[in-house]
Length: 84
Image 1: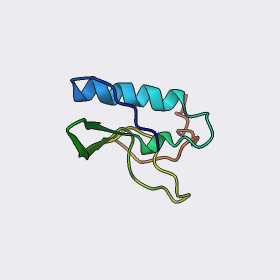
Image 2: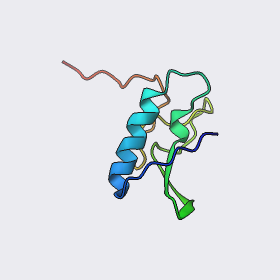
Image 3: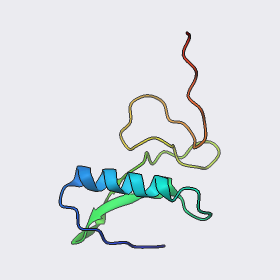
């Protein structure tokens, strides 16, 4: 487990930063981007999910952001193509 304190005052900005950082580290073995959470320094018990916390049938977490619209999907799962 790695804890990396970052001083960002706004929750939405902190969530965007954490999302970008997690996605940039996703190719490193052992990094689980979908488990990323954000918390205030003085309230680390109150965590905000960056990605959806729903567990998919393959035991991985949904690849979408927290509170997304539509159905969940596993990492590397492609969205259905739209009719042309």
